[in-house]
Each structure stands twice: as structure tokens, then as C-alpha cells.
Amino acid sequence: MIKSYAIISDGKGHSRLENIVVRPPDETEILVEVKAAGICRTDINKISRIGESFIPGHEGAGLVLETGNQVTKIKPGDRVLLNWAMPCNACYQCDLGNQNLCETNSPIVSGTKYFSKTLNTALFSGQPIPRLFNLGTFSKHTVVKESAVTKIDADIPYPLAGIVSCSVLTGFGSVVHTAKVSAGSSVAVIGCGGIGMNVIQSAKLSKAKTIIAIDTDTKRLNLSKTFGSTHQLLANPAEPDLQSTLAQIKALTDGRGTDFCFECTDIPALSVVPLAMIRHGGTAVQISGVEQELTVDMSLFEFDKKYINPLYGNCIPEKDIPRILSLYQSNEYKLEEQITQVYPLEDFELMFKKISNKEVLKGVFIIS
Image 1 (tube, one colour):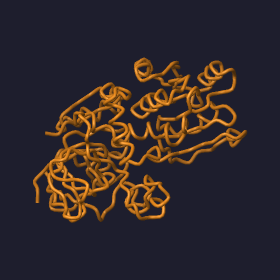
Image 2: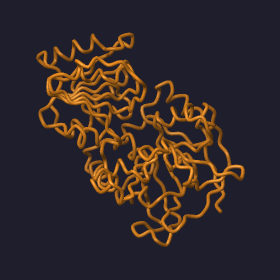
Image 3: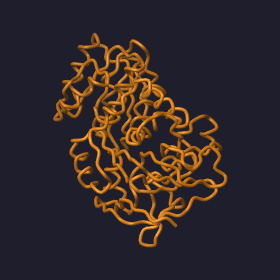
């Protein structure tokens, strides 16, 4: 058993840094020393909503310390990037090529929602402690399935690699795989947080002609220019349907609306607004995963409009992670510019507070 430490959340809004013990990997698992972990708003939300104790964190990068004897693609000493969309490559969805929807390993699709009670690899106070999305990257060590890691062959620092596996891939994949944004098209992005900025730069990568950033924060709107937005619209938070912004969108698109619109805010009231902002036959993508019950005006769906709520941007980690790292190395994809705050894991309370207050675009824990 390995002595380690991790953030332990009670799932009711309280967290603390505690000592844990991590068991060795079994035949198909890998022991990773986590070097850096990105923080998503998903982590902040789950800390307050799950209602039971767990180790948060679902983005990260680190060093492989030990592997099981059936692990074939990874060896001790490899630098790896961790991801939560770990396919089994044998279920119905994996056979269809939908590895992000794996019916066996996905904690979201398989019904366990946040973590599997049978995959606990850490002990806290002598009792098994689950890990968010079966990763728990807010810890010094974690034991994961082989399919949860991708070898880092690129020359990239751990903090940059540590943000790729969720917000970067989700934004990238939603543009490239889900919506299939085309060259010369028009795109609107509601919410310029971590995912929104990746949608913006992925739309630029796809050669969209018009990329409209929408947010209530002028600083984030100005930053969106760095990632490729061509227009920046300051939304009124008092307008739940963004009517004033919609009028501006129409003015910019000859009254039709954009070809694509992405919602990246996690605000339930905004989840169907993209339908109002797209043209007839356009595509609305609701990325933030709103799950609340809503009353919806079905006329918004008229005239061949498409509405998609993708999981993980339909990405396949073993293919898309190397692609992102290659784009970064060729200066075609921005990662450094996304990170606006870096703290040691010990300062987690300050980081959580800043993210909750939207003072941080993307934060990273350095774990030493």
C-alpha cells in the first residue's frame, strides 16, 4: 500500500486535505503519480451536490509508477494524460465507435453517474473512498484502468497537459465531431469560460468566418479575441432569454441567425436559447449538460433546426488527445493562454473560491 494524500469532499460543500492509502494496481491497472490537475466547474458543482464523501478531480497528467502485468501500451516512467471517458472496446456503443458512450466503463452512461463503488482504489480512515469519474485527480496518487491514460509523446509541461482531457476535448470535439463546423460558416458561443474558449478556438481552427462570443463579463469577452472571436457581445444577465443579444445576432447575420450556436454556461434558462439564435436548418449544441426539467417552446425547433447535447464532444481520447497535443506543438492550439491561475493542492480552498466567483478562466493544481 502507498501512503498518499488527497482532497476529500463530503459532497455537501466542505472539503479538506487528508492522508489516504492507495493500493497497488491489479493486472489491468496503472499507478500514476499525479503532477498537475486541471479544475473544471464540474468539480466545484459535484463538491456541493453529490451528498457523500469522495475524491474530486477528473483532469490531470502525471508519471506512471507501476503497471499490472496485462497492461501493454504503457510502462513505468511514461508521462501520461488522464481522461474519464475510458472505453471497454467491447460493449454495444464501443462497437459502434461511440467510445464516449461506453456502457461498461463510463461512470455517466453506465448508471453510476459520478463513480463506481466497485472501482475504489484508495482508503481514507481505513474505508474505501470513491473518486470522481473513477479518477480522483486531486490526489498525489491514483490507480486507474489502462484505457484511462494516454501516453504523452509531445514536449509539453504537466500543467498544460493537465487541462486537456475534459474542457479542451469537450470544446474541441463539440465543434469538430458533433457540429462539424464548416469553413466560412457563422458561429455563436454563449459563455466564454473554459469550454467556451475552446469552442471559439476550435471554430477558428475549422475556418469559421464569423465567431461571435457572448458573455456577461467584459474581461472574458476581451480575452475571447485571443482565441479567435470576431465579434464580442455583452449580454444582460437580467434577460434570461437574451433577447437583446438575439437582436444583435440577427443584425450580424442578415436577419437569419448563425449557422451554429453553442451553449457553454451551465445555466438551465439558457439551454434552449441557441435554437433562437440559429438560422433555419442550423445546429444548436448544448454543451454544459443541463439536466433540470424545463418548459420549452417547441416552435423553437421548427424549420429543420437541429439540437444536440453531446457527451465529451464525441471525442475518442486515444485519437483526439494526440491530435490536440500535435496542434499545440505546431502553435495552432492555445493552452498556456487558458490557464489564469496555478496553485499547489494545499491552497485548494482559495482556488475553489476564485473559480466559484468566476475570477479564474482555467485553474491548475500543481501536486508535488
